[in-house]
Image 1 (cartoon, rainbow, N blue to C red):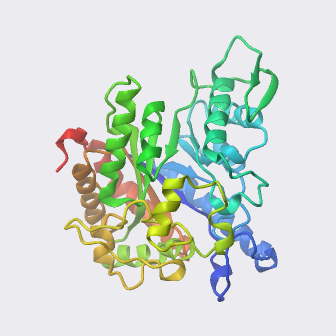
Image 2 (cartoon, rainbow, N blue to C red; image 1 turned 45 degrees about the horizontal axis):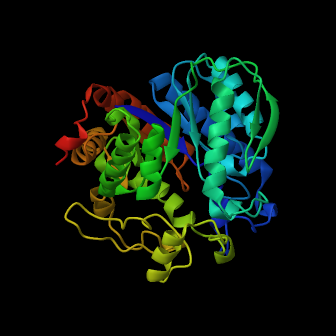
Amino acid sequence: MEAYYFSEQPYPGAWESDIESLRVTLPNRHCDPHVAADLINARLDEWELCDRVGINIMINEHHSSATCLSPSNTITLAMLARRTTNVRLLGLGFPIANRPDPVRLAEEIAYIDCVTRGRLDIGFAKAAPYEISPANSNPARFMDRFWDTHDLVLKALTVQDGPFNWESEFHHFRQVNIWPRPYQQPRPPVWIPAGSIASAREVGQRGHTLAMFLSGLNARKLKDAYCEGARAAGRPEPGPEKFAYMGIVAVGETREEGRSRADRIMGYLRTTSIVSDCFMNPPGYMPPAGNVMWMKRNQTRGRAGDHFPVTKRDGTILKVGSGRDWTGEIPMDDLIDANIVFAGDADDVHHQITEFSDRIGGIGTVLMMGHGGDLSHEDAMTSIRLFGERVLPRLKTYAPPDIAEAV
């Protein structure tokens, strides 16, 4: 099993006061650039440590948000391309339906892949709904534009006898002919996150790596849908390497220390949905089935646990709130049992990850949210060292089961 370390790169000072929204409308006067500089460089230091201990790196981007200081996957990837030498770099993901120039993105991907000499993984993501307005995007038929952009970027990365022209409903480009072409041939591996059955099935049809976020044992349903899509497209039966799962991961010298760090990282879940309702479901962004699901639950917005409730192994559904009350009074034991959190000492974390993988039929990659909320830089660095030295070597020798063998 492989591991990728991730931080959303938050600015935790922004949510100390009682404000309506951490995204879109929060004035950037709340951002002290000196503090931001310290935070950004701390994250870069953590990623450099990952390179030294053998943990792959995952980064992302968001916009107009105090919960994520990274405005561009490619900027961060370009820095890490030269500041690392050993591990793979994953951008998960590029919000391609909001990108006005997909060909430029393909050029940047190919360039970074050459700088890393083939250590790049690329992820395509559906942009968060609150980013539609700042991006001046049309939410109607958003996924149609997403897949059209996906096809254009991949063709630009793989065609070697161009140039070619691209004419579609959403994009019009002449003389597409990127230089350089990617170091990895025919292109870097593609990852796509999915939280619904329909999305997982479509990722399976395309044959990309499926990333599942905080879905717990319900990840098995996403895997099954992915396999259905792969079979329908005539693809080989996917192995564990096609599946990645993100949970909050924290390691300590003791069980108590690891759990305390996980509780600090949980600040991510307590703040990620602090967004004004008016930005959370722009007309056309959600498919009709999604809107029906929300209305049945008397919700105006989505959050973790929307497609599948947060569920313990015995079937108990954990009641989650919204915003700062996302986890409410849920004990850490229950969050670990529900596979939202993997935390404790090194033995605990190794056991929790491998047991989860066994139960859902095998994952090839754990995406570890190892920093978030107001976890200190020092605690993050210690957790990285402990994971790299005491957990990762054992994960690399762990053999995930076939999906049919799940408990």
